[in-house]
Image (cartoon, rainbow, N blue to C red):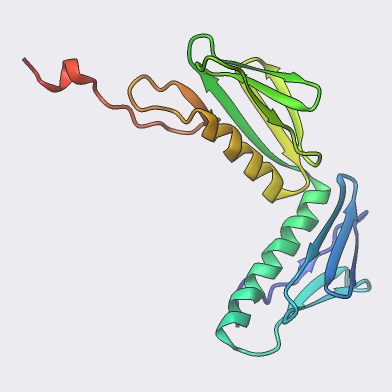
Length: 183
């Protein structure tokens, strides 16, 4: 039995969950999320015990894999509507900066033009200053994907360390040509 899949998911106070057909939906203080789960899995919401249980039909290899996956996705949804998931990015480089214009994130990161990225509706994007980006959302996948899209615009390079990186990310630095030859 899947160790992750067999654990029940506690339902916090103020969170309502329901299953309608093959769609699981959860509603909380941070918003509402829906998930269309695999037809082989069964998601049961127990209101009396205040928990959610994911059940699989048999020990087939695919069902074992889907069991843990479905439970993790449901758990992330429940915890996301209680406390939003966050990603923090920092921009390092002379003249590199970010700004928000309406529903777009504008990045000036050493290119001739300004990179404009549309901010997804479910993600809240804030700029404490022009070199830090804070993303928050109840949907873990949406906030992680948007953070990856931002980082991909100008990933940190190993020689000077310039670029967009996650806050606290270690970038391995390399010595340049002048130090490599030794002569």
